[in-house]
Every structure is written in structure tokens, then in C-alpha cells.
Image 1 (cartoon, rainbow, N blue to C red):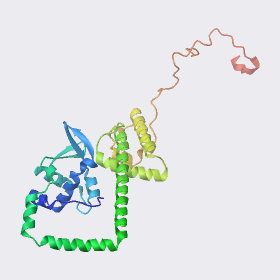
Image 2 (image 1 turned 90 degrees about the horizontal axis):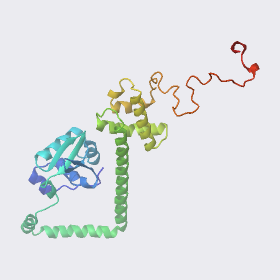
Image 3 (image 1 turned 30 degrees about the vertical axis):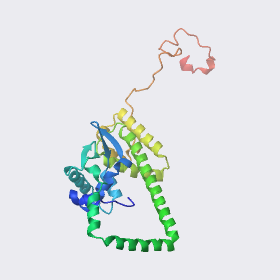
Image 4 (image 1 turned 180 degrees about the vertical axis):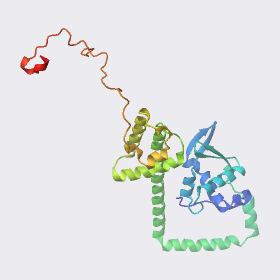
Length: 285
């Protein structure tokens, strides 16, 4: 969750945005610092999932459909370019959208001239705040510490999410049917956590186990496996299912052709074996 949100009130009024859309646009404006870049048709977009928006802005959003609708509205207002690609929501700011952090100095000057006493009131308030800070010197340390702790936790959370996405992409490319990627990613995370709690294993080993399992079931042509949704495979722990039988005769009795001791069916012909006769059963003598 974001520690704070900056909403440019003037831009929201100029562009016809409500508070929710203003908070969303502020998040998109900073996507370059945290979102994964995707090059599409020569233009750089940033992957901003709806779940990520809900996670970062819980005060403003709780439903993916609302996030999607606001993505489209920002696109229609000419503030962003929105593209849907391979189950990913891709966002790029337009030139108009990039002016979010700009402000009109002339407008600020007019406000100050029309309210000359505003500065005195603000100065008085600042003095009160300053005096309060001086009498509570530990507040600064506490605030700084809380901010640093929050930044550290946020960085760790982002790193963990990126690690999951990295390994999920490996699983996604293992050969299963590519449907419901967003849902499959959520299942990948939750199923790993459940599996790890029961059978402690690293994320790397867990991912490789799934990749090997998928490859084997595809090789054995398990009935219906090529149509199985990845989310279903993960949710039902299908990697624990029994494997189908190997096709009859596959990999059985094969001897490398370059083996000089290989028996081609004539090995015993014309050969005299030096074996103690007492060791040979009577019916074979």
C-alpha cells in the first residue's frame, strides 16, 4: 500500500477527474519507477495490473472492474494510452498526461494578490507547528524511522512480487495452455505458500518441479492435459497425480548400437561355455 498519494487538484479540475481518478493517475505517473516496461510496436508501455492498483490504493479502489473503467476513461481523456496485451494492462502517459506535476505560476500569483492576509495566517500556523516540533524533538526521529521502515518494507514487498513473477513466467512457458494468466499468477503465489508450509522448498525448486512435471505429462500425452487450464492445474495440485503408463515397448530392451558386447541373437551360437556341469539344471543338459 502506498504511504502517501499526491493529487494535483488544479489538474483534476482542468481535466475533469474525480479524487479516485486523481489518485490513480498519480500512481500511473510514477509507474516508470516500479512497473515492468513492455515494448509494444516500438512504444514503451508499463504493465500496471488491476490487482496492483487495488493493493496500492485500497482507500480508492476495491474492484478490478472499476480500475479497468478508469483506465479506459483516462485513455479517452487523452491522458494515457491504454493497451490490453496477453492478459496484461499496459499504460503509457501521453504528452498531456506528462504535465501532471506542472503548475501555473501566474495562477498562484493571482491567488496570493487577491488574498494578501493568507500569508500571515500561514506564517502563524507554521510558527505553531515549528514550536511544537522544537518541544518534541523525538517526533522527527520517530517519523524518519517510520518512513525508512515503510520504504524498506515496500522495497522488500516489491522485490518479492518481482521474484514470483520471474519464476511464474518460467512456469507459464513450460508448455501448458496459455489462458487466464492473471488468475494463474495469483494461484501460483498462493499455492506455493501452501505447498511450502507443508513441504518446505525454495521457490526455484518448486518452479522447476512444476516445469519438469508439465514436460513429462505432455511427453506421455496424458489425456486432456493439453487443454487443462494452468489455474486448475495449480489449484488442484495436479503435479501429484499419477503419471499415465509409458507406451508399450518405449525405451525397453534398447542397447546402444556401438556396444561391442551387444547380443544380436547369435552370441551363443558355436560357443563353448566353460561352466561346471553340476551347476546346469538337468533338463537343460
